[in-house]
Image 1 (cartoon, helix red, strand yellow):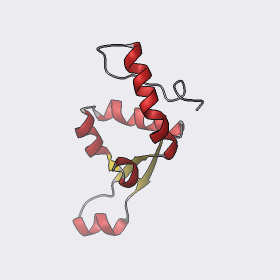
Image 2: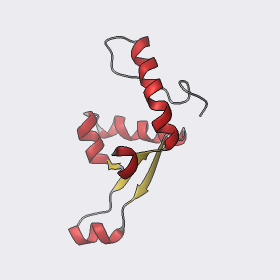
Image 3: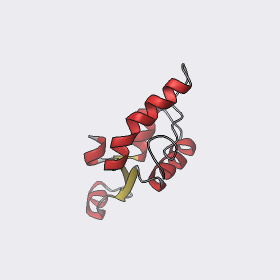
Image 4: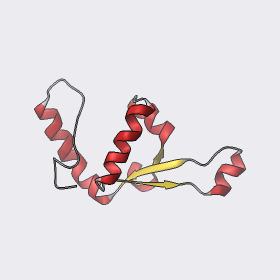
Length: 94
């Protein structure tokens, strides 16, 4: 679902429990590595609901392929800690 449709920032923050100051720099790093893409929703959808447009994020094919390996490597390297996967280091170059 995340890869096909994408999620917007508040959804991601709620799902991960990460504050915006942590989440958005991480998303930007993943975007620069080619693992995540971002896009704006259509103006008409936001206007129909009377709110600003949302910026959505979704995994790229590359991100979907490599993320499980990066998570496994990070989890194995730091047992008992949250994942600290580095997209440029696990599963290929940035």
